[in-house]
Amino acid sequence: MKKIPIVCLCILALSIGCHKQVVLLAQGWSMPTKFAETEDSLGGGVVLYNWHSRILALQPQSDGAAKCYLLNSNDKSWAEVPFTGVPRGYLWYRPAIDQDSDRVLFDQSYKEDDKLVIAVLVGRVTVNGSLAVRDVAERKWTTDTKALFGETRPDVRLSEPGRRIWPAFGMGVINGNDLYFPYSIGGVEVTHNGKTLVVDGSKGPYANGVFHSTNSGTTWQMEKTPDSLGGLSSVVKTENHFYCFAIKLVRNQKAQLWFTQRPAIDGSWVTPETITKSYGSDYVAVPQGDTIHLFWLDALHEKRRGNPVYPHAGNYEVVYSQRKDSDASWSKDVILSEGLLYSYAPSVSVEGDKIVVAWAGVQTAGVWHSQFDPNDIFYVTSRDKGNTWTKPLRVTDNIKEGITAGDPQVVLLNGVIHLFYIQGKMDLQQLSPGLTKLNQPPWPIYYTQRPFPD
Image 1 (tube, rainbow, N blue to C red):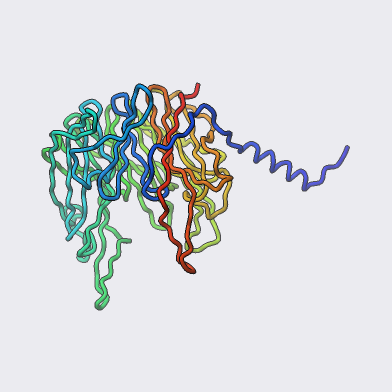
Image 2: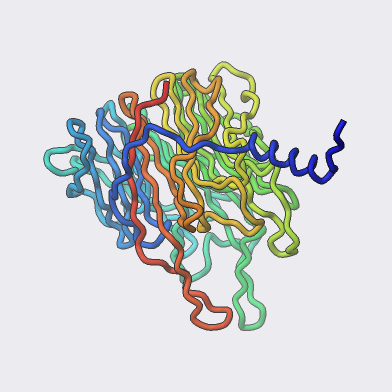
């Protein structure tokens, strides 16, 4: 018997292992076409809505307005249309749109002078050659530190004196006369060190919950969740329950993804529970009937690198779990990005039994890789409400040219997957030693589609 050197066996084993991890290039997608442009490289993509058998795309602008695009359901072409009826500023945020009533909910809130100022706009969306919000009703009110946090340390404030801070509230939900949108607020400790003002937000306190209206936005009340969850709140509704998700920051541990729920009719928010103790980034919760489909980037298998300041590589995995209203726990986690080392910005759409998930990522890269480095777009599908999934397939093939594809947005409509993504090449300019110009020129936003795979 001929002997094979050990090094050859190792190379062979490595090649077999790599072969098992190869992610194939997907087939069946239409030729990508330029849809729009961002304002700055990966910043400034579109927000998609499946609305009355049409796709509505909003692209927020830095001046507070937004560009609006509609998909022509007859020939699949896109057209930019005027968007009127909403004051500037509200379009910075993702509005909640209800297809049953055509109502829309915007919020614009800020912290200033130790007050939280909440501004909410409710209207009705119409399309007649342009997109307009009509029958607009706007409500504004304020709340203070004590109402949010209760009794606190004497130096606790909502924000640094003299500054206006815009908190990132999550998308709301419209259910008949009930309107919800979540809040996540952190306080700061303001002290003086001689003549120097010291602002420390590391200690909190924190407050989470939802603003709730039972009369279509005429009056509002604040419903606190039973525990201080952290940040990045969102609220969604299934057939029988409302769910509120948030991030729990735990000292000396990885972040945790938590949730709480309450019955759709009467009842109160239950004690929050942990979904995962290895949360990395970017969760998406999609309701469907009595089920929540939940996706997030998980850090359980995150690698470390030899840097004491930035020790974590950020190589997250796209993970899926689901829960029915009647379930006592979440289903077992499923890793959807198997075979990829880095994954970024998952986007999800559900239609009937069909689910599609798209994200940016790469199979292999160094420990300093980021979403701005060369990445491709990948996707997986499920035909049975998330019980089984396909292996990841690659939509783009540009990494070898040093091109970055990112911020994918996906929507299912009548059995067709519509995919949008940003694509370009970083052109960092070294202005001087240690000083790099980070802002980039606009990048194209591309659009492609394909039938949902058999």
